[in-house]
Image 1 (cartoon, rainbow, N blue to C red):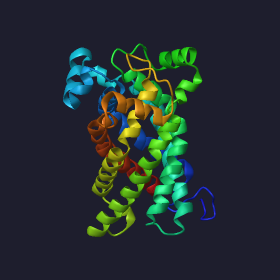
Image 2 (tube, helix red, strand yellow; image 1 turned 180 degrees about the horizontal axis):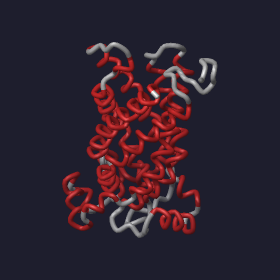
Image 3 (cartoon, rainbow, N blue to C red; image 1 turned 30 degrees about the horizontal axis):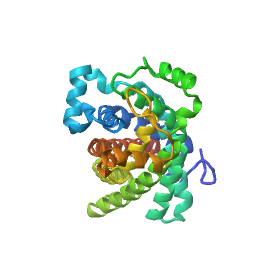
Image 4 (cartoon, rainbow, N blue to C red; image 1 turned 120 degrees about the vertical axis):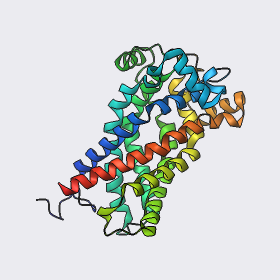
Length: 300
């Protein structure tokens, strides 16, 4: 039996490996369920000019994919997401829980601690996820030249070098730091508010609807705030592939300037709607799965 003195035990009564398992389960379920919406977002953000999947919005982008590629076109790259999402979310949630315990100072309702813990979690998990995210997005593009995950990895390494797999890491961290700060702080605040409106006997009795609602609200808020940086990330990861512009610089400021020059400020909000449509249910699914997994481990 693990005692309270064990360094593996956190405030919720779970061990580090259990947080990793719960996070891995939650992340895999979330991304697999919402992958078609993520494909729409990537198509809309990657291309500039007169790409038919961009200027008609979500409906036209969806219609274009279904007409030209069939339903399978919405799932290109899902294997890369499957390989990356589990390990990345295992790191994500375990780091979050450990940091939340250390930063909270005994105050479970400390929004600053939740936000700071989220930032630490994303810095760690993005190091795991970024290479597979690059592969995933390149496979999602229209007329992608890659046959699959490993073909993409081999060609990128051969033609562009290992650095290409991490070209967007800085942008991803800069985007995800405020994303997770807003996401976790909003999630904890909304969850607390909903629990107070409808009191339960104990924290273990928290209903799935509370986690799902809090997750959806936090997902929408964080997605809306960080869409411009997500556009930059997609441009960096897909540059030079399938007609996407080859960028002269990986500087966030230079990419933003390039997008504004071509399309104006509205170009920075490309894919905002599918991004919010992705993150609302995705966050609801992820948090519900994560909390359910934690409850399972607590019981057994």
